[in-house]
Length: 443
Image 1 (tube, rainbow, N blue to C red):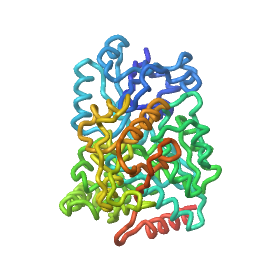
Image 2: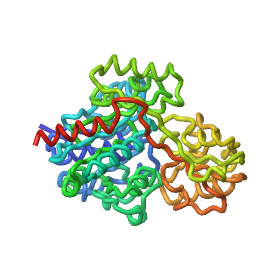
Image 3: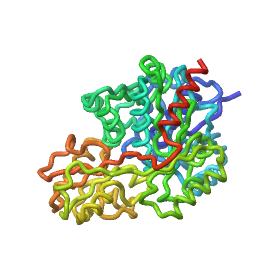
């Protein structure tokens, strides 16, 4: 029997993981190619032989997703596996319809074939959409567990945008490691806040290897998902963050609805700035699809390190990139900080350099804000050029990373940052204490 010819449709994350844990050494399948979307500069490369295994001595090519019909026809594809996140249910079914019209099966892989089991307790933090507030939730969970005397390691969803052969397993224990691993802005946005709290972060491509390393130094592993993807590790406690600014998205985006249905705890974040109807709509969704989940009411509290820099000033607002782009949000912490301090946002679009111009074309919902895009050294330089061209008094940085570390500018930069604040009971402290007691009894 000839192996089935497989095409994995992805974005340099879930696609690589599904390949590693299910397809890599499986003689019944041959992965002919990956396709890439969402992330620039991935298509045209090769998943390297050093990671692809003995069945793929030349590695696996990565093509643009736009080439999907041609690849299916030329490669004789039998099965197309969708393996990336934050797609509307409608978009998923449009892809399914296209694939089915060409002949192959269309597949979504579930937890049983893709989740890895850990010898140490795992707490997963995922979301229903990008930009709901996973990072601040992960930080709150990690700090709480450290206060309870636990050694905590955070394992982050993959963002391997550099030399894939060098990114199988990466450990971040200091800010210097960010430079050593040539981290992109997106990686820095996720890792810096954790490292600044003396937390160890792992990420990469081969999560079986990463898990083996993480359990050596952890009492508890926190899995932090990317976008709204489901966990790679099987959690003992699954915390899912929902966003009442986008009511209804919790049950209309893939695989965010899967997370919502699997959740042990749902945190409804940003309640203080969301319309009451949005909060109630999210609660109605939870009650309908997962009535046994604990619901935590919460706010994203915003702090600015030096408000005097922006009070009443003309400012450029730089926001977290993925939240604005494939997360679909028009603004983030920076815009909220600008309103609080009566700042006047300056539209950066007339000054956009290079690929930043394309970002504004590709995401027309964006207002007068600058997404912190930096998937390559060239794009970081274009971001810097854009910031320096804009005529303003100061910059409000709403990205979680320290923009001053990578951008050279004579404009003063004020950092606006979110932190999670529960507004009632149950709260994370009580939930985590109960989980740890239950875990210890189980041993």
